[in-house]
Length: 526
Image (tube, rainbow, N blue to C red):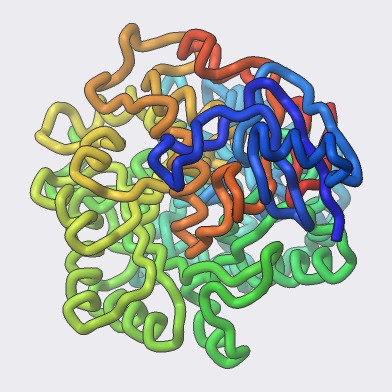
């Protein structure tokens, strides 16, 4: 047994004061074998009487509970670290120039992948085509993902090797975009992206990239995550944990396509230990706003379509039932208002059948008014990413307009009694949790625009935002032993350079983590 006394004059416990009588601020934590056992004067008295093996004075202006990213793609982000980054490109020509420069650094057989291009920010916001990509990458496979991951921009070689021609039918839940002559343009939406899987791809080993990403997340103040990626990522985390290298707590989702293998392995949600556990099964119901594939009840402004239902409703319902029957919780991607309505319909069906597992809607971005109270009625977690709001607000105004929807509606959801869990959806957005907290309390971008915030009536308090990024995110994967700095909880915390409650809301975004502690052990120091 080891005991450590952690001291700081401004430890924010994450408690409202009504939970077990614990005050929201304390001055000391006594940690025994990774768990908080005493606070404040009681903890300090134990330290003075020799009841602590070590005494640590934490740095900075405030100490907060460690933050949990409830929706992050760590394999995707790890591989992005070694790929071209097109997010800041403001035109097709600028994007192509960046691609050409990056291509010059690649080996002869390496794919040109990732990219994170966002044509909505280009001077001429029109999706690109294979011919433009052929100009800078004619002799290697090029398949560049959009920033939201719901569209691929492929070159002619990639289409040819995948056997995608004018005769290739659109797959269920996807679209091969075609020109006026019926030829594929190189834009593949939703499940059509999977048609490229037949093309062999040599990739760098994941684990070294994942370890680099792991350390970066700790430095941002994340002490735990819910990872959304696939089985290769899971295998890497299992190996890291076995080697004692895994210091983040990871709830590892099962992708819908991997469900049968997970059932055969005997996995179920919550299985594992305090560091690595099995998370929910992740399903897709629709696409994304930026790709115009979010499933809406009405067409996007200036577009004919209402988005894409990536999974037919009967198939989704069958998969949800099968998952719950085998002990898995459910996380279902839904962005458009029609997608959210139908996912909630499916959840209502399984609740009526007696299923009690954790049900989550991932993103829950655009909601019909009638669907808001259903989150509480059905005990459904709204797993949301505040930075999506500030990244998409102009696009939302442009293609959704002023139709009567609740968009990025965390105030409305909280007032309706819903449970919120916050995350980033990195690499779609930056994984820095203080960017999310800033977006939640201001609904403004880093530049302070729009003045007063976008739809400011949806702002929430810093306490509410922190709760969603700590307790709410942990409870969304069934964890009740972490998220607050009170007795009985795991000692996961971050020391930061400012007190977010004492600075202006605009300054919360620039908070810097000085030290990260997981289970009472320091895992990062700046």
